[in-house]
Length: 355
Image (cartoon, rainbow, N blue to C red):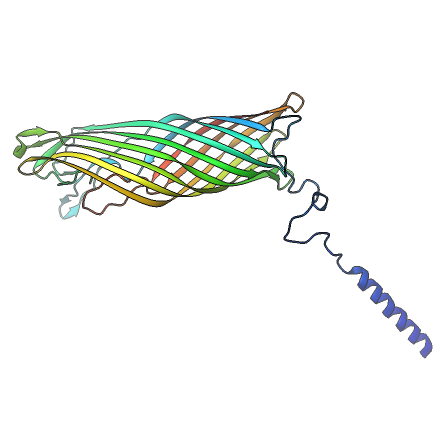
């Protein structure tokens, strides 16, 4: 009996060792954290997701019509002084700048490399616009004009009856992207990118007021003429997400952030009147900043191969948002004044053709 028990125990131990050895996890066929070969990668997962043509030049061109609105902080024509009624402050009224939507365009050129689906793409954005705003019959005796006017911002001995302004904006930006599109699922294609961003932005702000002042002998018209010229260059990174809800149609979301070195040259001419005489002031300043820029877009697209996969056409419609921090560098007076941000947003309709 003891002999049978010993033999059974040895047999059970041998069976356990055998199962344990074969149940160990097989070693990886590649070194984790390092590059792998194509046969080590599961088919489709992380595979290149770019447009792939037959006998093509691996080139593509893009053109976009943009219809954007530009908004900039700290651009107002005037504001009423805070007064008190029965010991309580009344509401303050701002006479704001009117910002409209204006057309512009984007143009791009791309090239796809044969190695691992990498691509190089450059894009130029052009947006030039002018906004005009005027107010008449301002009924407040105590009206504060913006701090553009360097002597006395409050007309306590006169009446501001008319205010008019014009704001010119010119945006010229160039993006260069090194990117790779790949499948992150059966319906999701990701396209992370990185590259330089640069360009120049110009602004001009002109404001004319009509003020009735007894000391000045009646109506007089102070004005402010400010200019900003800036150039910027830096690094940009982001990702395009394409989720296909059918074979050809997709939802698209784009995200990007930049950190730019920006140089500003601001100048102004100011004509006004103090309690005794007229005066004209001019000024100039130069400043360098590290400027963050944020971009996002959301919309829909459609694409299809043509001519037996020898070319490809793609159409999309997106709504974009862009923010340039501290872009308002108009010369201010001695009063401490924070610079404002520049906001761009609007519709972007694009066409891309691969050949």
